[in-house]
Image (cartoon, rainbow, N blue to C red; front, side):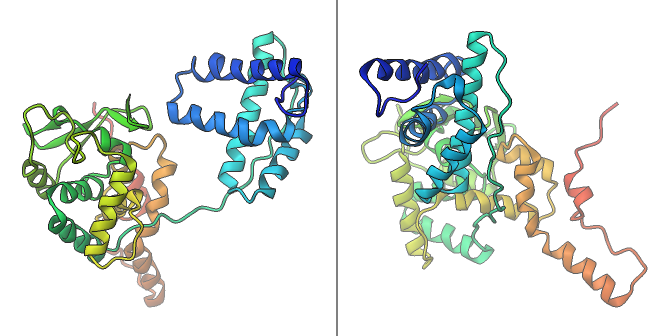
Length: 330
């Protein structure tokens, strides 16, 4: 039952490896967590959890040990999100051990840090249009890349894994997102384990049709070698487009996805529709884009200033309209 692999004798090292290994194989792999999630768990265990509290027997883990882990990770100036991830992994591993032993886990509090909401970065409309134009100048592949993220909201991994048989032209141009790429390997399903369809804008459809394509090419976007895009390749291409548009950027692919979402909000698209287009699991994730409802907010304050009593035109930007799902069909 000793937990850690450091500062202990060889026998304890073996037992520690068994505890951690059993958690990964008996929980994470059995639950079919995504490979990226399992890699994150391994990193948190090896770099933070084991060094901080690994000398404690797994059946002796209590609330104070979560505090020790939190302080140890904070001393490394890690983000609150990373610290919370570490606390969550320790909690899950401890509870898994008790479950595996057929025992009732004691009550303990992980003490997650309360995180401030971070405003999503996005391109302003003139910036985005300049980026699209610059991408077209760089080349058809970069043009399609920018539009896939900015006009369709694809994640980086979804772009890298996108295949030609995922692109439909009839009865309307749309993309079926069924996989994502991580570490040069395709994983079934997207981040939220959802398969989703995203209709294409006319210019995205045209950009994809304009791409050079060999007979045996599987992926929509490829590198010069003929292999699928990597995260680094995406970053390099976006940096070229940003430079061409005169934008001081760092090739942040998620900024384009945020731009897609904020453009939809600005057009008064209902949040539940945006949620489905982005593939979010929960509506609360989509709600972070409500800061774009500046028109509705300004209109409300104007009513107070004027003392108006009449109802203004409904542009569909009130929270109730934005968040309401479609009416149930009888």
